[in-house]
Length: 187
Ligand code: 5GP
Image (cartoon, rainbow, N blue to C red; front, side, top):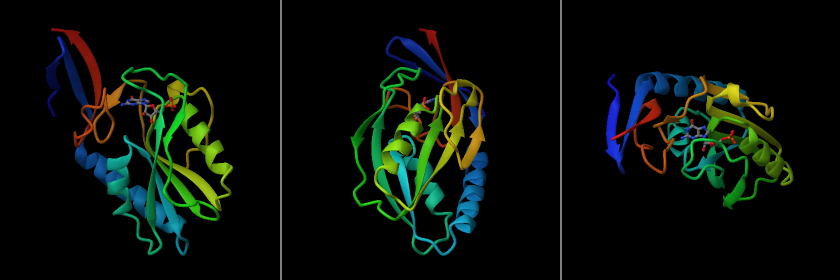
């Protein structure tokens, strides 16, 4: 696959493909099968973190074979338009249903420092769910600041800023069917 080169706002944005669409889809299918086995006979609620994990969640849930499956969404802010973690996490919108006594699987796009997932695990724990686990598409262990248990990991990647398949830079590039590393040049 070729590099995507986009002139934008006086700079050139370059995206080098790292995980192609077929590789992502195959792994998402595997994760769905594993989740289906692990939660057999239970009523699982996927809680996807807006906006980055929406595409992942939409694909993942179509590979989960559980009659009691449902999904919900919440918004967290931690990034803005920068490519380094601010460490400040805020709930910007909440789930629409009660999670009391439910089996919750948080669906996240990427775990970097771990601060966002630490915040969300602590927040969820106060709501008395039956269980809370995390499924993240990507994990960047090099930047870990706090350790959070990641129960399902799609891919472990190096410490590079990535976009595509739901992940954005300044709200752009979410629509790419693949994941690529991003770099910049002066125009
Ligand atoms: P953490 O709190 O673990 O440092 O960061 C989690 C959040 O930071 C993710 O949900 C995502 O929004 C953002 N993030 C971390 N690394 C990247 C990256 O390489 N690309 C993009 N687009 N977002 C990232």
